[in-house]
Every structure is written in structure tokens, then in C-alpha cells.
Image 1 (cartoon, rainbow, N blue to C red):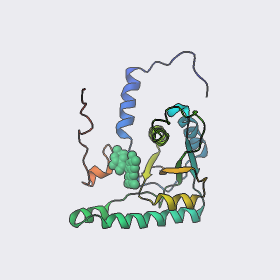
Image 2: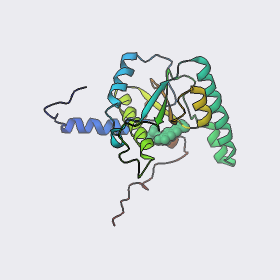
Image 3: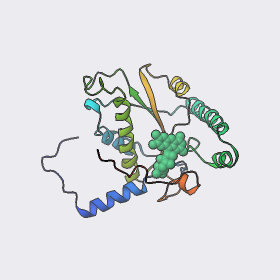
Image 4: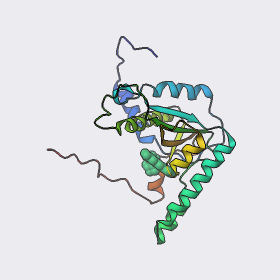
Length: 216
Ligand SMILES: Cc1cc2nc3c(=O)[nH]c(=O)nc-3n(C[C@H](O)[C@H](O)[C@H](O)COP(=O)(O)O)c2cc1C
């Protein structure tokens, strides 16, 4: 990846497309049973290296989970965590929760576990002495970039966080300094929607709570 001498012009047409991309990015849990070309995944992996990170630390570490036994263990982990989560709701909320599809682990062709390497020396500690959580924040920023880049290729991405992270980390047998940030399902979406699934299933509407800007 090289640095361009002449900065590109992002014209109005591009800006309109970018707005559409942001609006049509979805958390996808319903995938088609169809492989994703490795070249497309490699392209995404190259692109996300350009994501922002504290001190330019690039602390994300990616595990592609392909082994059947490990996938089955992650799936069992999810089923258990999801059943436990269901217990924390009562009445209609519990019935609604039980109807939600909260992962695409069953069909998604690509499973990527995304970790943060808390032992990395890259970045020389810049910004993390004061706010150590910025390493994790950098990984979340990378995932946001990946989410949009994947959507631009027509791929769907679903973030699964209903997992016991300690058990998932043990299942994936990674270095002890790696912290699980996200377990991602990636593949071709079965359906396209302009609104979130949780809105469509009447779990949680969007609000303007985060739109207010305080002035001080
Ligand atoms: C940090 C994070 C964790 C999430 N975990 C889950 C999850 O465990 N299961 C799930 O179905 N969706 C999960 N989501 C997706 C959200 O439910 C989704 O982003 C939200 O409902 C808005 O929908 P949209 O992404 O389609 O706009 C997660 C999203 C984020 C950012």
C-alpha cells in the first residue's frame, strides 16, 4: 500500500455514496451458505491495516476460526451465554428476546475472532499510559472500518458478543496477553435492509440520545 502524491478528490457523488454505505451497513446474522473468495478477505485485511490506532500501535490480532471442533465450541459457548442472558429478562421482553436471532454462527462461512494484543510494544506506549483502554478502542475502530469495507464489497458482518470471553479465548488457544474484543461472522447476507434488525423486531428503536452535543 503506497501513499499517493496527489490527494484524491471526493466529489459530491462519492459523498452521497458514502452516506448510503453508512446507512446500509447492517449487523448481519442471516447468511447465505456460500464461500467468500480468499482474495476478497485478503483485500479487506490489507485495507483495515490503515485504520487509526493509538500511537499507531495497530494492536488488532485476527484469528480465522476454521476448525470444526473450535467452531462447535464457540457455538456451544454462545448457546449457553444466550440462554443465561434470556434468564435476565421477564415476561414479554423475555419472549421477544427468545425470538431474536443474535448470531449467524450457524451458517456464516467466515468466522474471525478479533483480539487486542495488550503486550504489544508498537506505539511505544503513546496515549496508553494515561488511557490504557485506548488499545481496545483502537481495535473497535478497526472493526468499524472493516464493517464498512466489507459492506462496500457486498459482504455482511455480524458482531457476536454473547459469549463467555474467557472460554472463547481458551477455545482459540491464543497468547495470554490477547484480549477478545469481538467475534465476527462474515459472509453474503440473505437479505438487505435499511434499518437494524433490532428495530424491525421491536427490541430497540434508534433515538437521538447521542445526537445532542453539550457545550461547555
Ligand atoms: C460492540 C458491539 C457488540 C454487538 N454484539 C452483538 C451480539 O452479540 N449479537 C447481535 O445480534 N448483535 C450484536 N451487535 C450488533 C448490534 O445489535 C447492532 O449494531 C445494532 O442493533 C444496530 O444495528 P445495525 O448494526 O444493523 O445498524 C453488536 C454491535 C456492537 C457495536
